[in-house]
Length: 181
Image 1 (cartoon, helix red, strand yellow):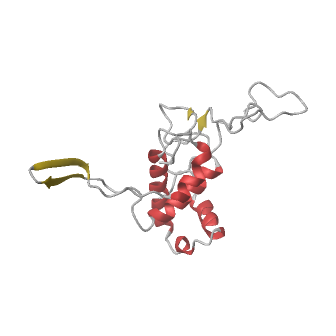
Image 2: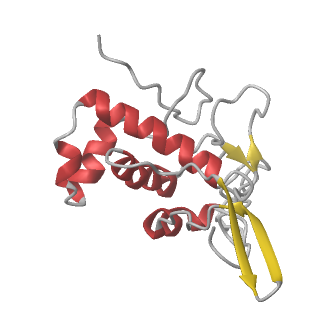
């Protein structure tokens, strides 16, 4: 029995697990020459898309622009309200209604941005062959010089992975922090 991926469309779908369908991810990877994706089974693609969505939502959780449309019931971080996409409002010949989000320079609250879908596709490709987020362990290291001894505890000293392509694709959807994390 094949698993069925539940895709968030911007309508706040109950049980949503991904921002992009397998069919759309296939099209993305095909146009980007990612042949390794094509060799995966549908089930493996669904698993990778779920892992990628969890990673992207969790990794950028505190930096997304705006806020969830329904924070108490929404499964994923998107769709969001209050996401400013333009520095200045878009002007029309005919005055828009007060609720015309594009006029106000904001992303419509039913939108799952293309950049987010692309970032999930890139993360899914990585997730299909390796872990996106490694488990960090506490480590202890000691250093002794002459009679002075210093002990450090904290992360194991191994750097966490950074994925530049994912960072670049979603940067316009994040609050500015001075650097990409």
